[in-house]
Image (cartoon, rainbow, N blue to C red; front, side):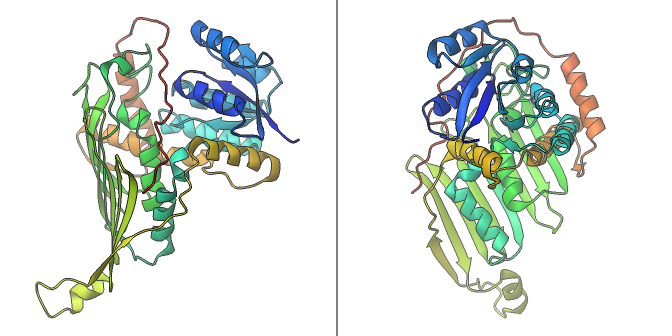
Length: 394
């Protein structure tokens, strides 16, 4: 096999973008052979825009059952991710899943088990892991040269969205249609990165404000406090209501501090490196107001930031030659565990311990789904997502 024949289920905002990059030859080892969408307007778009030999289906199940694909890319509303992935695995197909892995971890756990049983390749579209800055942060933290993590802070408030965005589809911004707000739609990348780089916390206390800045029933403003097994603490702040927003990710360690910041000029990574371990300095320095000597270093990276193309190229290469994935699909449960824990903490107004009580979370989610507002069914509006994940690094 020289190319992997892939079908895309869902050609809305992200699915249509993926289809164009494959058709344009950005991922040479993938060949688009089919798409599926429940929306007539999106099927019409596919027939008018994509090559004539790309088959168009009404349902994802029809595409999976067609027998013309080696793999599928799932880019539909969140609740359907595990269901379609499990169906694809049962039919012997490889799966690439858009974020998040699902809405609740119990369903994602079933998906992970189906993937393992099938023996097929399973990848998550965590394209931010391809960003050279985050890769460098991972390398520095996991090398151990900076010592143990003491504090983590991420203010990620540049996910600005207008009311028209939330009004663009009947499934958006409802508990029954989308399953959450900023945590489940915009922040899966950030939640994946914070656990990938810093590890999973052991306790979470969060405040999720629902419909604070928009006419929606799900959260659009979140502040969460994290506690880690080694005693480190963290704060995660996000919203879709701030303009201009901030994107600043700080990790304080025993040997210094890493600061990643996104601005109009690009993304920078700065290391404030101490001359000696702060814990040792604290215990041995005779001067009460003295601070460890410090060097400020603008960290160099390889400058590569292939984003979605990088994830898809690795997916094809793994299928064809066994090369590494950017992110294994089974890892999607980690970031989702964080968002589930934040929701549950806010709903119950208390600190939540990890491992998460998955049955309790699902019970609380289902209460909200039962009371969820039913939006008027209408054709979804598709927005241009080009440039959403900029590649400029300074």
